[in-house]
Image 1 (cartoon, helix red, strand yellow):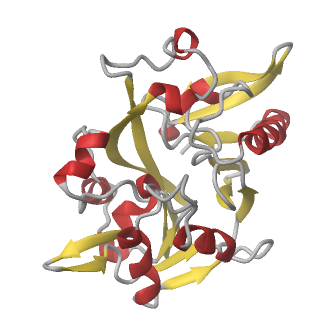
Image 2 (cartoon, one colour):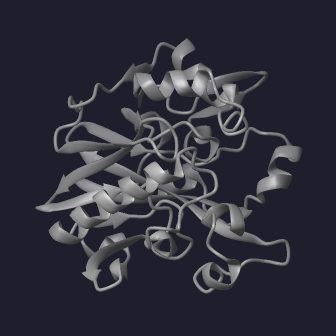
Length: 278
């Protein structure tokens, strides 16, 4: 098995929304905001090369939306999905499995592209993986999340016949297990990958960045913040007990970290690039 970081660029979100009830005077120490109170966030994906399978976990925001959409999110940086795949030695047609932690636009938007006047799958040979509970949640969105679940990102997966569901407790990928988290959104999948004797966890929005490790640091976007608190506590305790490597999708600086137990609770142990353990 080989792992590759796939950077798809940066976007901006309101710092207060990203840290919930935590005051700006505290969170800005780790994530400084611009004059509009916006912080930059990565959209960092993970490519898993395992035998004849090439598994991509999440795919960023994409570029098919209109100028008004992008005016809200300030897509920036030199990296792109296709460019990062090419840098790793692959193309979109090489992807065999597109694993989606959840269907918010910044995690799945790159999986569908415009092809002339129609929408097409970015990865034409790939199976697109979600789970049935989250899929139903996304295609019948509540008012709070409706702006995050965009039909043009989601429905082409099903209409193309490429969509399949992962059943709880039955992973289609050898060496993968999943922690299902329902605080941020219904049944978000956190992949836990057995990699060379180490457990590599793709944290998605359960832990967006190192700055979110303390338990009260919960995003305002989460639909069930008290559930997120419980899920974070359970997961981070296990990560500290077992020295899991946490791969950070949204941290603008740090690719990976480990955590440790302290008198104040679980805190960051160290941060490092993925290449350190490859």
